[in-house]
Length: 208
DNA sequence: TGCCAGGCCCTCTTTAGGGCCTT
Image (cartoon, rainbow, N blue to C red; front, side, top):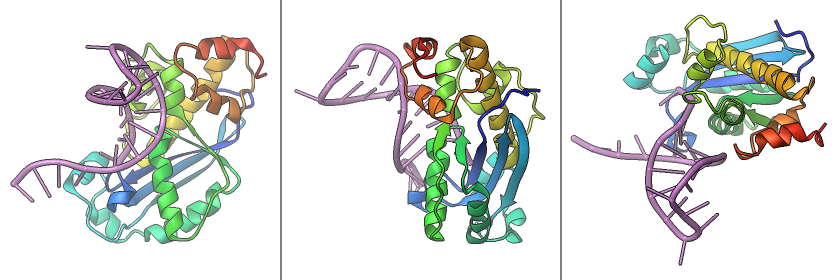
C-alpha cells in the first residue's frame, strides 16, 4: 500500500455507445474513484439509459446489454449526480481526450460545468514506461504487475485500474527522481514532454 | 451496403502520413 501523500484527484472512465459524441454517441456507464493521499476515499458507478438501443458490438465489448439499460436512469439524471461528485476535483483518465469529450458533451446537454483540469495516464505512461509492449490500460496493468480481478471494459473496474496505475506512476516518480509529492501540474507537464527529454526534465529539479 | 472520431506523437517530418488509444 502506498502511504505517501498523493494528489487528490478523481479517476474516471466512461463506457459509451461508440467513439464520438459528435456522431450521436452517448455514455452508458460512468465509474470513478476519488483518491486522497494515495487512498480510495469514495467511488461512483452508474449505468445510464442513452435513449436508444446500443449495438451488439458494444454489448459484447462491455458486457452491458440493452436489457441491463432498460431500467437504468437517464444520462441526464446520472450526469447531474456525477457533476456534483466531481466538483472541485482535478480529473484523471486513461486516454483522457476520449473521456473529456464525453464528459463535456453530456454536461453541456444538462447545462452543467466542472472546474477541474484533466491529466492523462496514457500520455504519462508512454513517457515513463517506454519499454512497455504497448500502452493500453490492460497492458500497463500487466507491465507494472498491478493487482486486478481480470474485469476490464466496465467503468468502475477500469477507473479502479487507472487509479492504481496513477498511484504506481506517482510511486515510480518518487523512486526514480526523489519527488515525494509530484503535483498535478507536474504530471500534466510530463504528458507534454517528448519521450527523449522527459527523463532530463524530471532530473532537472527546477520544477520542485 | 458500407462506413463513420479526435488528439497525440513519431518519423522515411514540418507543403504529411499513419499508428496508437479510447467505445
